[in-house]
Length: 267
Image (tube, rainbow, N blue to C red; front, side, top):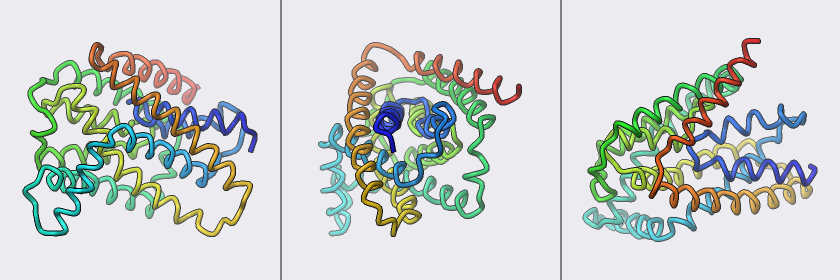
């Protein structure tokens, strides 16, 4: 695959994975915009792996805490902060895994990959993000995360299986409604992305097992590395900007892009 397309693919995935603008929508639209064929599942897995390592690196302290907590859980100790975090992350991941399997088995996952669905989801959930961000209070932080909140956010995350919704946008909206501040909402959302990306990447990998193609492996490695760099940049920028601005710039982008896509879809 041309290096330029790999670069664009990696940049799109890396820059949009953690921003509340829907990376899946951009990946679906990319082949049409560039006049190319679908990049294929192997490259989709590769860029997801790149973004996974980016979020793990950025939140390495929280990740280390959750890993140690997982060990505590296996030992029967559920009272540590790490054990609590590990359990809550697992709980928050269950809804999206179940919903994802249902959509894949029924074929609805492919049926929803249309410009109409993406356009309306971009527009509708953009408005939801604005409403929840403006109305949400700032009274909770990570230590206040409960099983109930994890279940609620897990359901919000499952909604993001609709192309154009945005996983981070949905979970941030849910967290703001529950009373978490902008930075804390984004932090929870990013940590929730780790087991979710692992789960989705594992599911996609089942479809590419056995493709012993060295050229494809090389392309995948390049895409993963570039997606890692782009995702780390986008994540760092967003977390810093949240100290001084709201999610409104992302909302404006979503509404404009959603409106354009709706016009294209129906004309």
